[in-house]
Image 1: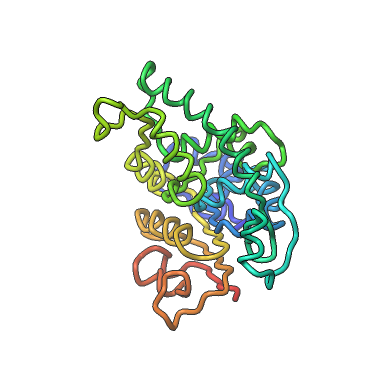
Image 2: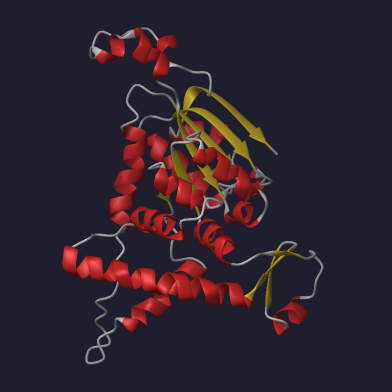
Length: 284
C-alpha cells in the first residue's frame, strides 16, 4: 500500500501525456482512506491520528461524531484517567462521565458549548447572507479552523485540506449542540418552521464517493481502526470504483453475529467493496 507507485504499472494507451512522464509516475502514490471509531480519539491514539494527518500520510478521514467532538473537547479541557470498574451512580453524582477507564467532567461539555455555539451563529449568518450550503465535512473543516490548536487532528486536516467525513454528525455531544442551537433560531410565531442551521448530507455522500471514484490512476487503500459506520462508509465508497486495492482492518469484532464490524475483508470482496486480487489483512 505505502510502497506502490504508478511507475509500477504499465503505461496504458489511453493515459495522458503527464502520466507518461517517469518523474510524475514515481510521484503518484496510493490514496489512503483512514477510518476510526470515537474511542480511539478519547484515548491516546488521538496523537497518532494527529501525526498521520499533520504529515499528509492519509488522504481521506472518516469517523463518528465522537471522533470529532472528543478531539475538540480535549483542546478545551483535560480528560482524566479512571478505572473500568468505577460505579456509574457514584460518577453521576460527581458529574463525571466514563469512557472505558477515562473520565470526562460535565464541565468539559459546558466549555464545549460555550465555544461552539458562537461558531454555529457565525455559520448560520453565512448561510443566510452568503448562501453557504454547509455539509458535515464543511462543518468539520470549519471547526478545525476555529479550534486553531496543533494538538488537534482536525486542525491539521483543515490546514492540509484533508477531508474529514462524518455521516453521523448529529450523534453525540455535537448533535446536542446542534439541537440546542436550533432553538435559538426558532421562529416563535411558527415553531414548526425552524430556519436554523441546515446541514446537507447529500453533498457529502457525493464528495465521499467522489474521493474514491476520482482517485483515477491511483490505487486506493483503506486502513480501518474499529468497525461500525467508518468501516462501512469507506468500503462502500470504494465500491463505486469496483473496490479498494489494499485493506487493513484492526478491530475486536467477530463475524459470527453477521455484523459489518466483524466481517472479514473477504465479505467486502463479495460486494465489490474490495477487489478480488487486493492485498488485505484483518488484525484481531
